[in-house]
Length: 276
Ligand code: FER
Image 1 (cartoon, rainbow, N blue to C red):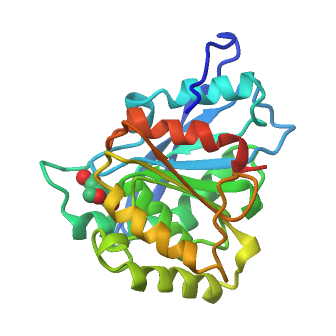
Image 2 (cartoon, rainbow, N blue to C red):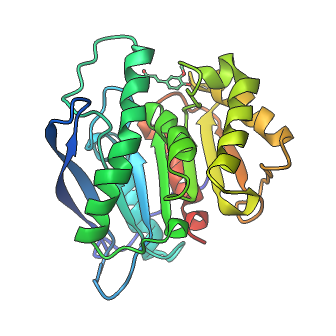
């Protein structure tokens, strides 16, 4: 994998906080924030595409920025003109402070990322689009995430395909049929992805998936069978090793365990294709 090189330090994007409000399961208002990455020379005369980048289990809106060189990768890519500038939103999928000790509680985490789909639709996307100069077309809206953020990304495909057209699940499988379902209930999962696409009124031309993980990643055994089975469903999914062809991509990195420090490199890799 090609790593981003040194770039012009004067062409840095900025981070802002966007405060917005959502509702918890009982309908009570909850105040939240998302970190907003605005590219260098962000100007309201332009309408920018937007990537929503979601943290992993136990994380928060700061996790990607704290734990990886994602900002550096974005700054470098825009400075070197690898791709046109876009906005990145780093929200949190919990509606309370995450309380995580030790192992993942699969059902609890699954409930959070599923609830977050409503927040995305009703609260977050409208807040972002009204506060910033965004292109509101679904073609210009992407979502990606690491681990539980990857699980979140698959749920966005199932629930919010009318709002989003680009999906970048990283080291996380689809949990429609419970924890680690991409590995444990592979056939059912892929059939459901297929059926939900049609049910939402979309087809092969209407989305692109950029998946990734590492050979040493704990999610590899769950995500890989799901992607391999999706590849066989050629009526809907067209796998290609070329980022600009087909609608399904899978990059597996060497020496890459389940860590932001590794996984952010997939974002760097896929960046030029997301809104191309
Ligand atoms: C996976 C998807 C998500 C996985 C783990 C997770 C083991 C989440 C782990 C965590 O939040 O700790 O496929 O594989």
